[in-house]
Length: 489
Image (tube, rainbow, N blue to C red; front, side):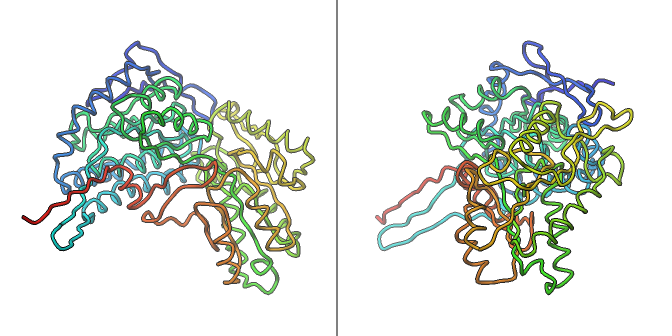
């Protein structure tokens, strides 16, 4: 049955004003399963008008009342965990068990975290003889949250939770490629009891409704996760109006494996941790996570051993039906992205890269014979200047490179215009301190990967972004501090 999704504007589920729609595909089958509004500027205007009208009401809610609604929404997500996981898997092609175990629980956790943060927030007070200063933190007003297709509900809640907690009304624009769980979230927001207009969800293309939202004069802040190219356009368009902008963009992340992490004298459990974690860091969600380690740099004395072990593990990953609990790798998100990854693999071989495993599409039987499946791929023999090691592929593709010294490892890791994350594997405490100061990345994991504490700053440097999300950083972004200075009389 064809699923008909709608915009959520002022608590009304409605199509685009002009009736236009976009098809929505299931990546695992390559078939259209639904349609979503192709919203335009008029839809953006309606959503922002609803948010503006609701702003005074929502800002007037006591912190406890806003927190209670966020927790109620988290309750409903947990209640509908299976339904939401199935929708996420249908939309993205990722394994159902991954959506159920990670994506949906994290969406609820995001809401609960910022609900708790709201209740623990305090205002700054500064006293001096004759004067008392205190700082108010009113909301920015109306915020636009633009979320990507790779972790649709997970990253949508990551954005809207701090915005709503701090008293802003939100217009969210999820990816048109993966809109299903955003639509379902809108239904849950109504059920949770949010006032009309506080959370609005508008579907459509970025260069159409997304641009209209970002350029609207009544929008005070924009939080975006997506490509560097789109982020640059948002920054450029927002600069003239001096809007607050938070941009989390691409990555070409490097994992650095030193000999002491993988030689024969290293504890076996630690070596297995290195291998298991980096396999996940390369291929989780089909490599479609901005934090994935697409470049693995290994000290030459242990390179051959690591390569053999890593490639054997990559070959053993099962590509298949996302609903199968034994599936490790599902489909990539769309036909366009599928072709992009295959073209990148062709480029890697023309650049002189050797395919150690994978490097090709995977063809399954019906009903998945038209799905977008690609084998986990490990490459070697490519220098830091190649397209493969410079451009974000965002797929199940990882390149191995050997290094001979700490200085060379650092140079290779930093030899990219991106700077989102890095993963460092060593037991040398001095090296950990040195490299943590010199790696050009906003997030550095040491002897781990994707260990997330929601209190910490999240974001990148260079072409990976501007601003930070997470913890108080996100709460501050959605506020406009106002100082009040009172003189004694």
